[in-house]
Image (cartoon, rainbow, N blue to C red; front, side):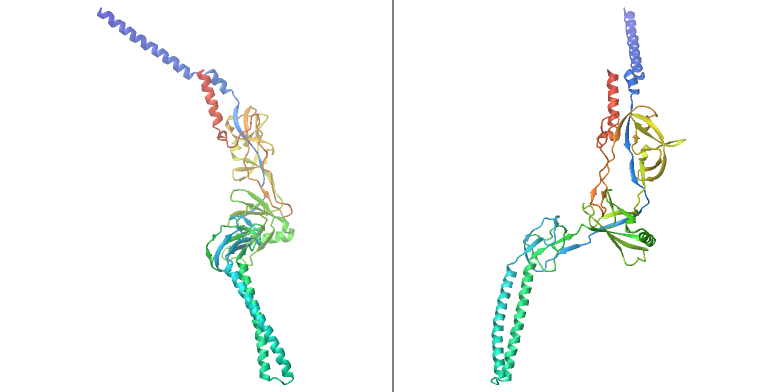
Length: 438
């Protein structure tokens, strides 16, 4: 009985081990053998991102660092002393020449004006009496009834009375001027900054700054050029006129302002330390994008432009035959051989091989093959508008790129995570896993 029990236990253990091995084998086979849903996923169209080409001016330009400065700027300083009663402007707003900015306490200055008026009336009364006495003594002197000394005294009193009236009138004018200074007006038109003195504070004449006004339109950009460049530019202007030169201003945010010089002058001598001469160019600033004190890039070049297509460097591939890109047309990937020029930023100049309406693959290039169908979505590059501020035309903002239209797919939001090429592939992987589990 004891031997039979041992044999049964051994048989049960061997059977259990055998079942476990068989189960593990089927599990590993299921993992290593691709599912039908996985095979179906391998035959799906490749997902790629495409982008249009940019057409830009690539003509030769000289680049300089310019400093934006106001043509007119004024510190508002009081001409009389007193307490500030009112502040009548909004900080940071645009003020016109003649707008009232501050009012200083007027009672004292008004009383001074009334006092000077009374002094003038008194002086005029004394003049009337002195004039009558002078005329009387003049008649008596002619008839030999008055002495010469008496006549001289009357004449002196008359002249002193006239001088007293003139002095009283001048004092009244000064008092009225001081009273007028209690109303502080904007001397120029421009943007006013922070109020440096608020209501209730005491200010002293010519010793305290109340605010600052800066003119912003027109505005001036100052930059320095070498003596050689200055002479070359001067000869070009003499031969072809001022309109032969075109300028561009690149703002700190990358936005471009195309603008011809409204007026320009140079310094009267060359800096011997740097062999450069300062150039001051005046520009229209209707949009207020040129801010005094800012630094900008100034590009000077010929009026005639040389436009060319630019392709993103991420779209360019290379093999033993040269450079090529993949475009998408009617949902089909197509290989195009291209001749490239110089590099501008993150883009490459295309000399030949592409048209301005072509859409090139910028992501997923390795998954696309010539003649294969692809699932393409269009990415529109966000570009700041170029402002044309030509003196001969009204200032206008050019239209940016048109709204994107998807090719064989719906439109894509530029801010969507699909730009990073993650969401689409994660969704595909999740779908494949779900189908495999089912």
